[in-house]
Image: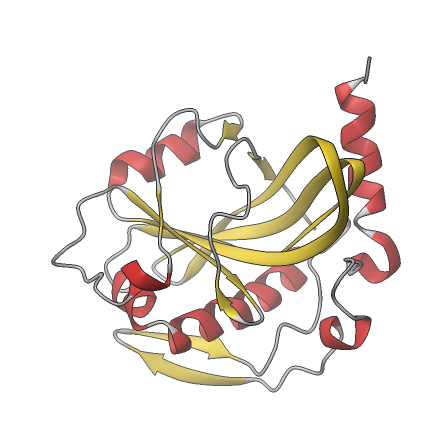
Length: 218
């Protein structure tokens, strides 16, 4: 019988190897690409944009590092996905995880760190972790941005002592098809999630069951 706490510790250590940027199926050169930084006006807000997400805000990452990676990941998402840019300007808050590493061999898991932004300012930092069981081998990396379109969903995140996705507020995963038609006038749900990789929008990538908890990086 597996001890869940021991598995969580193993998963965090395993998927946070060299420079917190190890994921099978993705080369270290891709992860370590130099970021070309810049700023761009998107709607009413200015965000940092970049060529690539060059670092991984993993175990031990500082608040500055998390903010830096989140700026670049969010900027890239907003630039490539007009629906995300439109929702961003109306959202009550946005939780950004620039890079989550998912890996396993029999027992697997995923881990990442992110930041909650409100009116363009960082108001809190959160990690996410999940454990999975079964036949699996390999790994991947991805990120996501969670757009809170009303106070109800945002208040739940701010007041919770740990939010397990799938319990509590429901959320909608925005795939490529939905992204083509989604606008602020068609928004009906409280929370929309854009899951992305280096190649663009992805499906849910196993977000159900992952736990979001507040952290206090230096």
